[in-house]
Length: 460
Image 1 (cartoon, rainbow, N blue to C red):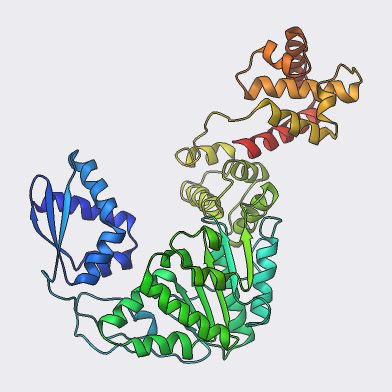
Image 2: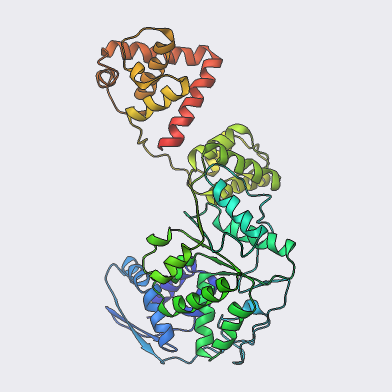
């Protein structure tokens, strides 16, 4: 009976953050298991509701994966003892139930000139080491302005964008900047899940007055990461709504991050959505090629990793949408080179990242190639399809034909037809000529490599 559940718990430990596992999963206990039903005992209704809302579907999927049959999960609130909390030693421990110790009153201290909340600002995340490009320039400028003048024009500041693009970096940078410039400001930096955990814990022990005092009376700057996680949590949204009103009404700075635009967050109350729109909304887009290379160079310099240009281009070409993954790949290469004594080069990068960078068939169209070639040579697409034989046009046309053959499954006649009805022999000649030039002319080969990187980075 326990063997099956032990397998589920091992899988959960890999996927669930350690503090969440300790708070919500450890206090539960299996009461019985049959071939189709598992009965789980929980300390109280809070645990049952949270478990069902956050882990139920995932656990059912795990069970089906392990046993190849569906299971029904039944919860029995109050079937196991309430977890006994440790006495909190600092404000960072508030709201996290522990497995041993004696229950005690929840102490929330708020000394000035230090970061408050369950999460601590990361001193490595500053404006100085944030790489700015066209994809994040506006968000960076907005964050810096909010840090320079907390509670000013950009209040609240709502920063949104995909995973791993730098939202948390900017949030920490704001906190670190304010901490240096205004040392007496009390900064509450917290993830939305922590905020919710503290709220639940304070409700359990009837300490809501301390919760509200901490976030409404003893907080000058509220920095909340991943605010989308409070969507659908009615009581958490209620408390955050009143906290928001109190802080905003007294001109204290609020900055929140999310993976979505406010109107796109399902389950977010309209009154919160409209308040997020009171201030400034700034988005972060995936970084363009040049910014990705700059990020890699910056990381390599700070971590003392040797990074040749061709390796930087290889990484930036193949990892486009996640800065965290981009930097992580560089760290893997650096660590491997350091441990083995091997030189960092393209071959090493491909070997180390072979399970991360899995080359997929190109989803590149003939239109994509024509557009990129025309842009590189500063000619019009219509000229590539024309019958004009000027060298200034025929050379780009031949390059485009060569790339169409390389990156697509189109036949010579199909490519010729796309270039204004050219004969298939014309395309064959172009492919042969460009192949020969790439071998014999190093200057042209450099141009061709540049075009290929552009095509690949925009279309893979």
